[in-house]
Structure formats: C-alpha cells, structure tokens
Image (cartoon, rainbow, N blue to C red; front, side):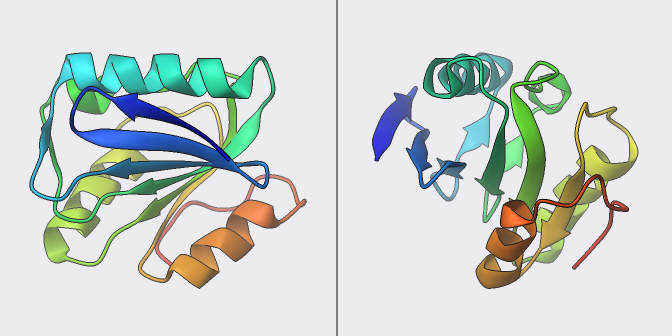
Length: 129
C-alpha cells in the first residue's frame, strides 16, 4: 500500500488497485486541499485510470473546492461514501451539478461501494445506493 498525506486534512492511499481518499472528520476542504488531492491522485496513479473511494463523513467543502476534480482518464469511477444528511447533500451537488469525466455514485455502505468500484462493467446510472 502506498500513501500520500494531503495537507494536514486527509490521506490518499492506493491498495489493491483502488484509490481511497480519506478526509479527516470535521475538516473544511478548500481549493488548495482539493488541488493537492488531485496532484496525489496523479502521483499514485502514474497515468493509470483507477477506481476511487472518497470518504465524505463529516467533511465540508468550500464552493471552489467542489469544482476541483481529477483530470479525465486519471480516475475510472468514483464512489462517494457518507452517512449523514450533510454527506448526502454534498454528494448530490457532485452528482447533479458538476460534470465528471467518469461514473460516480453515492453509498452509505462501504461494502456496496467497494463492490461497485471493483465491477468491470461500463458506466452505470448515477445515484444513491
């Protein structure tokens, strides 16, 4: 497993072919934090398109940070994992407002999120699982 610390607010890990972005609970993620996360994705992915799990639990994103996403081809699909109404609201913003270059879905179950990320099937409808 390889890991990169993202500012002092989170960690990006690569294990078993899946990127896992874990933001520390209670943090507010700004544009600089989001840009550091994208740079870490590029560094760990090394030109390979990988599935990614993003833990949203108890994290707030600034408006500018919500507009920063990985470049096309760096991530093959994104599973957003949350547990609260605030997490779901953040996920809805990502799913409905921001154009993403890959399939994305929201989950409240880590197991379901990981199963979805490991699927070899093509794009799936976006939504809540």
